[in-house]
View 1 (cartoon, helix red, strand yellow):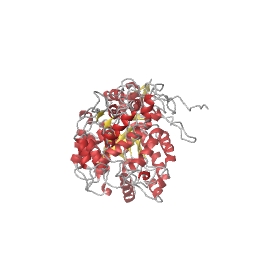
View 2 (tube, rainbow, N blue to C red; view 1 turned 180 degrees about the vertical axis):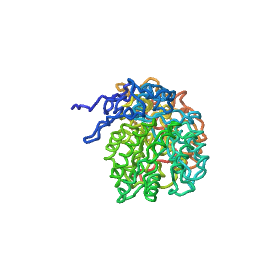
View 3 (cartoon, rainbow, N blue to C red; view 1 turned 90 degrees about the vertical axis):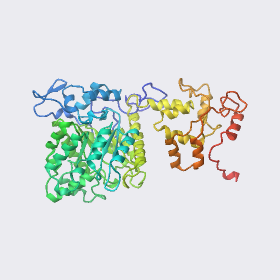
View 4 (cartoon, rainbow, N blue to C red; view 1 turned 135 degrees about the vertical axis):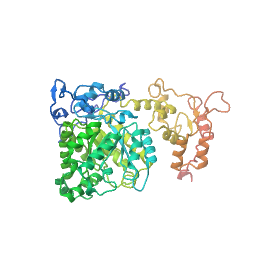
Length: 591
């Protein structure tokens, strides 16, 4: 029986067309159009907007062929302004270097259309910032949140968490501190950060005062101060309007956004419109001076599945679409924040509705969590939703850690959140068919097929954990692993069949079987946390000497290695000499 695969023109995510898999099942890429890399639409999905940032030029600007013409004497500051004038900045060139499936010209054109941003404050560019892009033509990005609270953490710990988040793949970091020395923490993070830093400035605005005291001057002064420090993007909750507040009255969990709830209280107290909305153009002027990007906050995002896709959430989204247009008219870069708890079946609709309402501006989503009953595991429940969100249109995914809803994340929580979201982002990129996105997967598969453990670990995202888990059962790099053992290793058997190419890729040949190297301190810590091995067993692994495994009577053969000796001898030596550190449990039949 033959099948017709639903190919729609998307490229193979392998740059070498490796393996037997055809190209992605996504639609053909349209970089330069509204569907750069896009999933096929399910029936009834909103269609992309026919407008872009080009339709919202500042007053006095005009189109001049492919690009725009600014008033005489105008000096561009923001990446958007440079792109509109046809200029390619060093930051754009750096993005193209980091994402080789895009040219610098494509990066410029996506920014000019408002479908991509480079969050790069002109002050932060003077420190250690390595420019990156957020947009659906680029790879899917992840953000890590951190920040000191009134009862936990401090500046040094937050800088350490920054470095840790960068190590584990965070593309941006948000400082959400609400306690301690906020100014010192923010300054230290920016000076040390290689990734863009975002903040929610309203937190600083109300430290030491009541929300009711918030006013225009306080808003603008705080934004100016943080922009001057080098913050790359601000979450501004300008889309929560007075008219929206009655829409949340019957929600199971009301307003879960800090900024949204604070501004709702301000509006009810003063019987006035959201000041962030009222003074939006003045806010734009501050942000433009330093090229701080907008992250338009979703102050009415759902906090539970029962409140997802409701009238309040969608009314705010419409306001965010309006604010996107207003920010573009002021020359500011914009991305839009999205919902946090959404049933799996509603994710595609939410992503594609935002694409339509906000004219393709990058969508930055928290999760979304697809179920509410797994506190302590919400990095997993949300990564499931985040994978779907990335595939259906989100440009950046805000990580969730195991501590979500429970407390402030610690160092290991940051790692677990980052890894869960790197998995989600990478899975989305492969599914979308972004060129080259599967290359590392294919290299690891070749190493796995060749039973080349060293390359296997080198190519893995977290080599220390992979090596530690392997050595926990069998600390020898031989032609099987402890999951199947010698006789049942299908990979070894496939490799031995000459008619099958598996395991024979050039450059992936495995050498002699060797005892793996002693555990590193990181690997030792991983096994200690797992608690499977005794301290004595871990000490043994941490203090051994790496060496080839040889039979006493063989001159140069690794006797547990069935490529070198008869199978019966390999089995005997496996039992006698490559004793696993943990005794094998007897089966019920043997008892």
